[in-house]
Image (cartoon, rainbow, N blue to C red; front, top):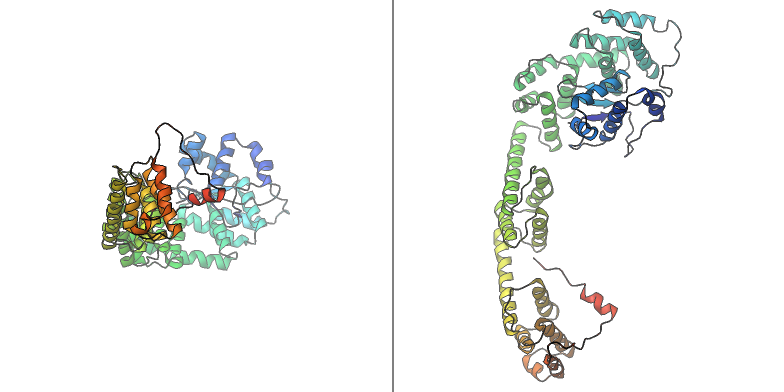
Length: 480
């Protein structure tokens, strides 16, 4: 769950916009660290990632998490934010509601009846002048009816007692405002409707092992889960049983995840969790196979494993490729991904096609090994050997017999494979296609003359045009 969020009136422009009235009316009187907390949290509120957390702010500013919350309590008193949820705090940033930062002048006795009604609702303490100003400011800047705000206060006091803060009351009122409820009738209907969730919420609380009192935020959560997401009570209860640690915050995160994945019933959620478990087990097996360790496998599952399974790969094939990569010195997920991408382009998605593909490569390597031996080379096959052989056989359409004959001619030269490539190119351009034609070719005589090289002396070099040099660097990548 994101730590810092914005109310809907806050315009998200893709960068952190701070209104000038904050600098003019609020910042001068605020301690530096509280200003820093406000601004850093405002920037983080645009992110849904793990960085949007109280710990991020604390670490960046070198203060404790409690000092972060203390700073937000300061801004809450000024009405710039609201701290939601006591157990898992979340900071709701408010748009600054008037240009001067101070309450505009209100005619005398305008809110006398309202003030008396509010005090009668909150009997346990005296409402301060500053608190009344917050209520008046809210009423002046919105179309919210005073009678509706009194009802909100009564609703909140019944939930949390007479020590309820004005910030909590105004948060509930603003949520009603967002829904378009500004009259007493509309607010009464909305909040009364939410109270009907209490019996269901008691069942949910029992499932998560909580015995605290039901709060407004709980009702908002449940309304979202059932009305917006479409979950049934039985589904929510089933998920809640696995949220005994983390409470309502964890339950909300789980249900939101399931909603985004289209898993709305108990059966669909069980299937999703089973598949998710499989994905993480496979991700762990693959990273182990290539010899790397990830503290979190989320990115591996999201960027690689899920994509490969959607392409039609199975666990055995992916593990076989991973082991092949490890033996070949490829030991990163990015490297493994590159290999699988190339295999996919060649139609290799299962063990049989992988075995057939590797068999074709092995057969080709055996032929290349014969060419190297005829050149007098005793070494392993490298990428350039495969590239040259593919050019000779596929692009130039030359026979293996002719290539091996050229290799015999290249034995004893300083760079046998380069020599063979030049010779074959000359034959190709001269129309030579058989060994017999090659023996009688003038190109053979000219090329063979290059074998007479004296070690330590400069070799006569051929000069290339820019176009020819560019052509040399446009060779295709290796298949594997």
